[in-house]
Image (cartoon, each protein chain N blue to C red):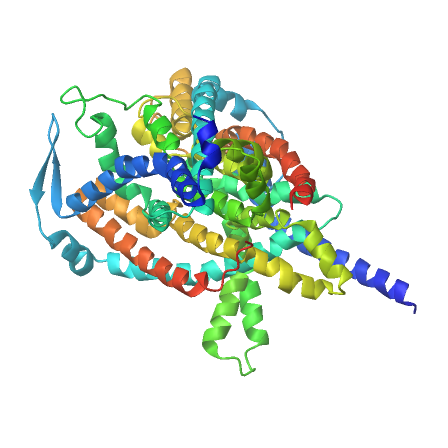
Length: 298
Length: 314
């Protein structure tokens, strides 16, 4: 049996390998993703009534969706807010993590310590910890104590007040400065992805470039940057999906709240559906724009 | 000024800038942790005392002792460790194989399978949680088992099955990472292996895997950390069992109840003291995070080593 594989043609090998390596996922996808997702779609057009033995579905048509958009007082506002937030913070997180990964990939004393620290927020900001943190008394006190930091934003605004910088751009810059701590704390994974990418760039490419007389600046833009472009795409996707699994996403909280205490399970599923479709559209656009500009080392 | 001294000065300037920046960033990151640690070490009087901000006046390990006891820490740790290990090992294995299959083989449908992996990421897990629960509660593999549907809730099976097929929590991301990694590795080694007569699996395990150690370590770390901290899946599929997230969530209330009972102060029972909860929760959070920190510090070595490795491979 093993000997037969020697004579596999290129085509056949490609076929066989592809199926061999991806089959488990395809099975899992159908069983543990597609089926529940289809059920969730179905539920969003129904009202779920739990009985003592199982559950029953009462058909509702589009009314759950209409309710989310037209009747619910906050849903539409929160949806736009969450999407806007995503559009402003994602570029900041990508830029910062790219920059940070390049710095901690350099050789300097205490590098190990700095790397350990950069990853800390990933460990601290997940699941139940974030849930408890939101209500933590001493943490709220700390935030009040840090309120002073906000004045930094105001000072920045004063400095540029008389310049001809457009108002919108100014808001973005000031906003960026104010949300820097948040950006730093939510960049851990992205930094790690970039860092792992940096480490997988073969050294001899840099050596060859140096021999040919490339400066550090040229080496960065002609080697490092193109080699990392696939990971920029990875990180954008990660940042987006991270934003809806964090516990303080107001829309996710609203969906949960609706399910447990509000208009019911059907409406909450409809809300989640709308949110998902919105995210899918955003991602499709990002993908279409970026994937042509991504460089693959083949 | 000679060129050499100019160069040297520039070097000093760059490292000075770098140091200032890194200190600033690290300060922002570490502040909450230090604050958490200092709160966890405080007796309740210090939290009421306005003059105490960072350094506890009379540091105590009492909070840790209380939370350790009432979380059932040893038990919860064991459960969480078992779950995180099973899941992450299976997830890394499954996602590495799928990532490799997508990166290196062109076959009809490969693009669709990749799109499927991304799709699993984009769907908020909350959306499919209830149907998932129902599926595992009445697990029948497409009706193959008929009315002998199994109840897998409360066992490790939901996690094992989802991990084994690369559909667990954020597994699409691991597939994506591994695919990117394999795409980044040069093809020559693989071609050479095929020419030398190695089969698909031999090539994968003996040639490609050693080259992807940085990716494997990153994936394992993510997978372990998220399974460890996961709240959503574990509370749904393992309701009522003692895992660290549940233990931590319930700890403060339990401690309060125990104290109320001990002091027999009927009038204060049920009274939720934010200050006290804060102490207990902060101590508990440190206990939950600590094993992850140790794991990370330990794996850090492999990141550093992998730099030298990639030199050989590339």
